[in-house]
Image (tube, rainbow, N blue to C red; front, side, top):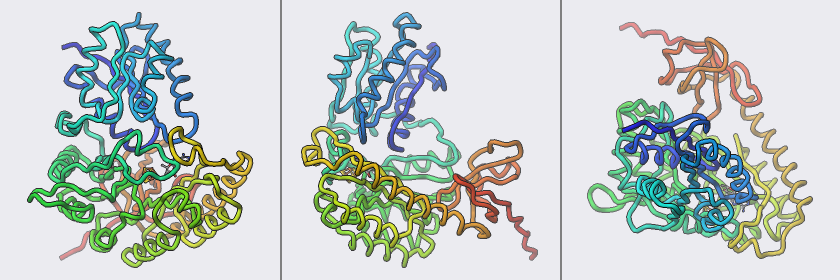
Length: 447
Ligand code: 5AD
Ligand code: SF4
């Protein structure tokens, strides 16, 4: 079988990064190997994201660019569009970009080999945006491409929460959880292939409720405890969580499971109860603050991250002030903030909109506060000792980089032999996007 080059372009969340890797796995049996550049590729997959602003327009302009590679190949190259825009706008893509060969949604990438065979044979394009009854996870090759020291593992997909602003329940479908046995097996394979840190992924990862090996069901807390038993696994994380699914057992896991890192992305979106109600979040600002208090009681060094939306329909200056108030109260180590962008088909899109200039002003004010909190958090680390999991060489000779427990990038001057290990360092400086550190030499204890 001849080797073929596969170039994958990934936009959006970490779940898309994972999906892209698994699409590569699905195509490996056909001879496809990953190619870093589009030039000369036999197949290009554009894995898209639909979450915010002008998603479809971005896809069409990128497809216009990719068309040149297809023409350069004499039309032989296969061009596929995957992900959430493909799911939501499949027919439109084929109508406006007829040179696209395959359109596939996030639930059907295990069928890619069959789609490629059909696209190669048939004159017309192949579209597969089903929500099939079988799970793609059951049909993907077991032998996944090694992901390196820090690996992602999707355990849950979809969302039943229907926040007023969000397309995810429509593009990714209903919540579904992979069985515990499959997750544990994949985690063991990742660790055997060199992973030392695993980040469990899901749109609502803490809503995971998977079939247990003994026939019952486990929640995420139990899964985390089981994963922590895997020899060689040094760190565990999970993202993204919903406050409503942050139950007492998961809070307790943060206290008891030492490899569960003290950093949690827990989106709140707004600090105003009125807006949270309009958003259909099903929690109040004080519910969220109570969870944060419990988490910090369980794990006092826990650092928090969140997502915020400004300018959701109905948001007044007073509502926005409540968001700033919540941010000041919590103190975030890191956060993402966005201007509300109407998504076709979602309830908030048909409500009266906040003027763009107002959204801009609020976003700037919120981001200034969040930036200040982030640099304050980073500055507070200077002089502290912490362990870093080294993941690769740095930009400068003799430098290696890794992540702190709080997900900050940390670089030191040190031997490449440390890559793949966790080692203690002392933080010496806080830079805009990273921390500098020196290794702490461990004295060998004499017995
Ligand atoms: N407009 C702006 N931000 C959005 N998000 C989701 N939908 C929208 C939208 N329509 C943000 C939320 C979510 C993150 C992944 O993207 O903050 O948590
Ligand atoms: Fe979207 Fe809300 Fe579901 Fe998160 S919880 S994926 S924001 S609908």
